[in-house]
Amino acid sequence: MLTGLWRNKRQVQGWEEAGSGGMKRSSVLWWRRCHCLRTTSEVGTQLPQQKLQLQEACMRKEKSVALLEDQLMEVEETVRQFRGAVGEQLGKMRVFLAALEGSLDREAERVQNEAAVALRRELGSLNSYLEQLRQMEKVLEEVADKPQTEFLMKYCLVTSRLQKILAESPLPARLDIQLPVISDDFKFQVWRKMFRALMPVRKDLTFDPSTAHPSLVLSPSCRRVECSDKKAPPAGEDPRQFDKAVAVVAHQLLSDGEHYWEVEVGDKPRWALGVIAAQASRRGRLHPVPSQGLWLVGLRDGKILEAHVEAKEPRALRTQERRPVRIGVYLSFGDGVLSFYDASDEDALELVFAFRERLPGPVYPFFDVCWHDKGKNAQPLLLVGPEGEEA
Image (cartoon, rainbow, N blue to C red; front, side):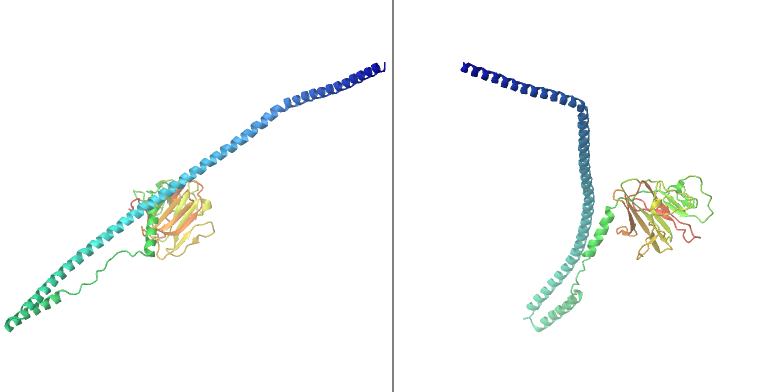
């Protein structure tokens, strides 16, 4: 009896425990199911936003990749251009040095040949005299034992001939060899000539008559210009023409690369040269400074070289030992350099002044002939051609 009751109690407890566990498991499953449903719903609403963020992130990375690829290409192009420029410049140096070496070698060969001819001629004469002296010595030995009369006769002949030979054959003078001395000055002169050789070929410029002030007279070749002392008609309405400044520009518009040209100024006491911005005004009185589109160097009063820098007055440059009669102008858009040289000596350019700034755009070569000053400044300006010829 008792045993049966105990067994029934255990069964009831087992059922209660089983029921309790089942309830717990059901609650967990129900909570998980609800949470998953809520999470899925939230994800469904956030998915488009996540996709948009992913797309924006991809676009940003793609732009970064494209930027880096562009920078890589830019570096490669810059290095390629650098190598090309180095190769070009060093190639010009090699050509110049090879030509110079050949010229010096030919000069040395010429001097050697001339010296060899002169020395061989002198050597031949000396050998001839030496042979005669040996023959006379032999004669004297042969007549030493001869009778006195014959000895005296031979002796007199020998001594007479000996005096003639001594008079005809003075000691040879040292031959002077005229060759350059390889010194620091020689190296400097070579460097100056090489610097000129590395300049671009002279540009073949011509004056543009449509831009010239009415007082200016141009040659038919448009490479010579001077200010007339006759009363000039008023300027027209063409905005390209100078109406106040006694100036003219070249036909050629320069916008990139390197350029070099030369102007013969001679003994003209007043002038200004350089470039003018293509968009700069040519009407009215010009204010020749870079901010107004003019980069100029000029001569005043026949002795004062000056640069028209950004200031109230032009900057007076150091006095040259001699006044330039020819001015060379070098323009490099890439390097941002506009240099003026004393080109009086074709093989030795001497820097006068340099503007070091990148020009804002295309420019024209500019020539301020200046007023004739009652004949005191009537000398012309001449454009030098590619082969060095003047107008």
